[in-house]
Length: 319
Ligand SMILES: NC(=O)c1ccc[n+]([C@@H]2O[C@H](COP(=O)([O-])OP(=O)(O)OC[C@H]3O[C@@H](n4cnc5c(N)ncnc54)[C@H](OP(=O)(O)O)[C@@H]3O)[C@@H](O)[C@H]2O)c1
Image 1 (tube, rainbow, N blue to C red):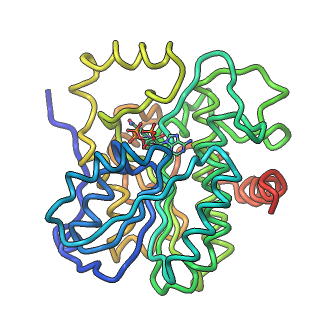
Image 2: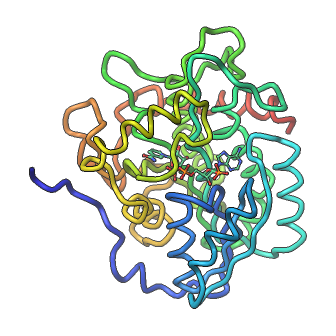
Image 3: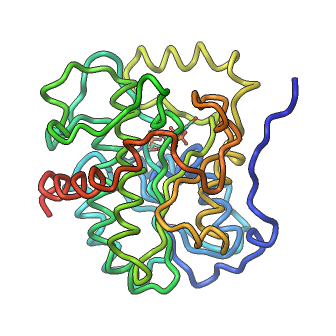
């Protein structure tokens, strides 16, 4: 079988000196977030590991010994708006600059029964979007005052759907209380929200604010699904031996986030969607991904929807 294209960060970008720079990576104790964190620390940065299980982050961080940069661990449950507010206050008190915010936490999917966050929001959307939305808005001035800062949200190929079935944000029911529930659709819809938000943010902050992007990381052999319900966990475990040849290492899956954080070329495309190659694209011509590429989902490019999503989300998170 022909080897699939894996897009990789340019060697010169991996040699850039990041000392003195501070990044936040959510969900950095595992998978794509852990490998993104490792590379930033390798290049001399300080990374705030924003995690819901500090003990897991501490264990993962034993692998950073001897690297040039440093890390600290901060507890945050991104599904809980109070926890996010508390986290941003701690960050603001401790860090005078923020060079990058990587909204990576996610990888949760539920079955046929919706789960709701403490704030009454559907859990997939709460983790993948609302928590990161609030975190970003509360740290936007810190990002804006840090020259050259960058922001990204990890979306997914599944936001693209297929020509016959495009996921979308449901502005009339963002908390997902009025519609029938399907865990996979909820996940895909939440990943559309990230693609839209990256574009809205780019439009709003312009050249004065952080560079923004959304990312499809690839099919990572991570702990994806482990935070979901028992059925999803069992399905993921069963599939793992069969998907090995189609999936990517976590290091390969961190390449797109790292490209967005490190490359000068990426800066030409504020708000854009950057994708690792993926066998899961259902639209012809998209499987090689692209840094950047246009999302095949027209709904995820609709700026009126993006602006309305942000307006509604401000109300929902209490901004
Ligand atoms: N794996 C893939 O093929 C794939 C494809 C497309 C997109 N993605 C996206 O890539 C990102 C990284 O996922 P991954 O594949 O690396 O999976 P992963 O290994 O499960 O990592 C997900 C991380 O998110 C954290 N997290 C989940 N819920 C959280 C919450 N409420 N508060 C704080 N942290 C939370 C997890 O913490 P715990 O360890 O405590 O659970 C973990 O650190 C996710 O946004 C995922 O949706 C993954």
